[in-house]
Image 1 (spheres, rainbow, N blue to C red):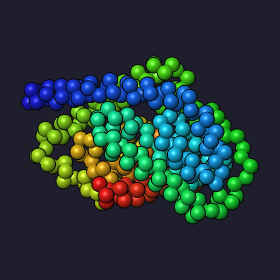
Image 2: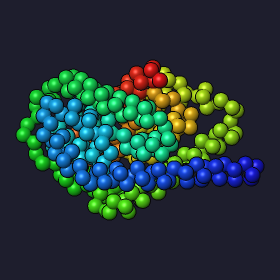
Image 3: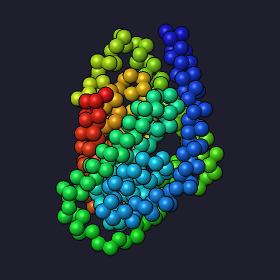
Image 4: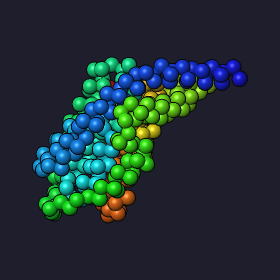
Length: 290
């Protein structure tokens, strides 16, 4: 028994160690991109107007620190509509991209996933603005959102964009590597002690049920959710439609800003409910084709 446990631990450590160089390089690129584009991207979203869902979904897919939190601040300040906010939430990928790249997943699949999130986020955003068009027409001249609200939360999520690019990349790499190690330990243990093919028969691999569960997991306001969902899909323990559902509803700490800023609880719960439903529908549709 002890030998089995040691083997599980060693396999998890080796699998995780292999990913660290790829994670570090990916995060270095993402940090450089973020430092050069964050302010321009936020300015573009603020000035998007009726093109909010389109621009928000495209720019939301660009890896960057705290964009979903900033978007929530804009929503609280009535600078953007709910449709634009949800579009940004849906297209935001959190830790999905670096993990898929480090796991050497097909670049074709990565591109399909990113484009799907962008297109779906845009379409869903415009539909949401149409459904809640009364809220859109009531929007007044924007008041400046309380900047410290989402910057403080961003720091709580260990996402400090003022650090050096290298140091921030190293910290982020180690943090995500730890999450991956934990997930690998869990998956390796399950694969070791469960009968062969047992995980393929679970509800998490059912294309009709997985989106409901995974979309709920995605709502967890932490990067661990996207790490768990992506690693489970790569490891064969989660249907790809479920992964997509969870990644669509995974908006990092975005919706926490709505509570932190003292935004209407009723409207905040409506945003979370709409985000969850969009994640389920998007994951279900994606799962029909893959």
